[in-house]
Amino acid sequence: MVFADVGHDGFVSEEQEAVRLTAWVHGQVQGVGFRWWTRSRALELGLVGSAGNLVDGRVEVVAEGRRDHCERLLAALRSGGSPGRVDTVVERWSTPRGGLTTFVER
Image: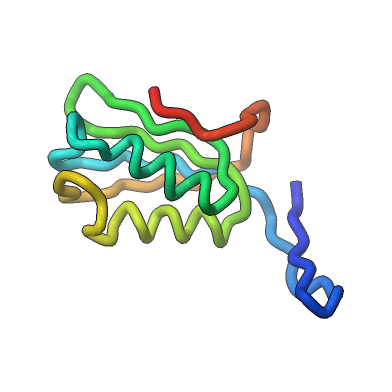
């Protein structure tokens, strides 16, 4: 899937390929509103996917959409502006699987 940016002048400025970002967030990120915060950032960026707690204390974030928007979400996850404490974010990029309609907390 490819997204096109249409500027205010009506011209297509750049095409963006859709991607899938999977990020594992390590730190104190459970029970502090981190998944809700992540969902809010993802929806602002027009991404679909999920943020879910893992049994080992990490949060797994799966996001699909424009690559630049996924990169902005990744930067937000690493920014230090989230609830809790983020120690490390491990990322994996892949092709989108589709079938997602919104961004949910799991």
